[in-house]
Length: 159
Image (tube, rainbow, N blue to C red; front, top):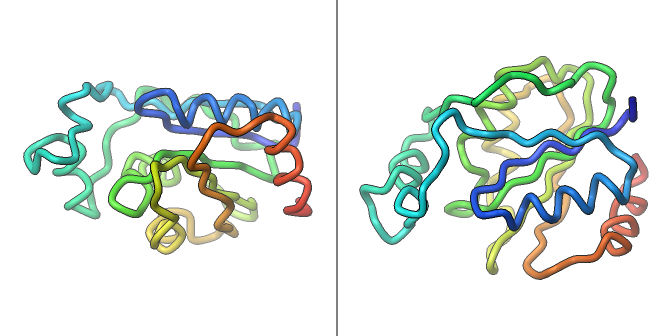
């Protein structure tokens, strides 16, 4: 088993594409964070204040249920966690994921996809869910990225 894990949540497939390339680039195991109830296009409509994602993101205590708890966290020292940026932070399902496992002593490196926004307060919003882990802001990818670019980025992290 690799000592690195790439865990990701992808609502539309964009983050999943980056995650798969990253796992290949760093020779990591991969795990998809899936909601028990998949998101529909209507759920993801950020212009609709009554959409599922809008409601979840307004409520910082929201914890969408996970489809499973099969991530192999033990045996991995470095965990890359990827997600799309929602409302300038990580979707609350990432908090659910962090709270479902013991990340004590682990290094978590965040990566995200976005049409243009940065991490905002993502680290701050996630640290409360994994207080005994070291969470590092990684990189937001706003365009297509190659496996080689991801390898170069990961190598620069010295993990």
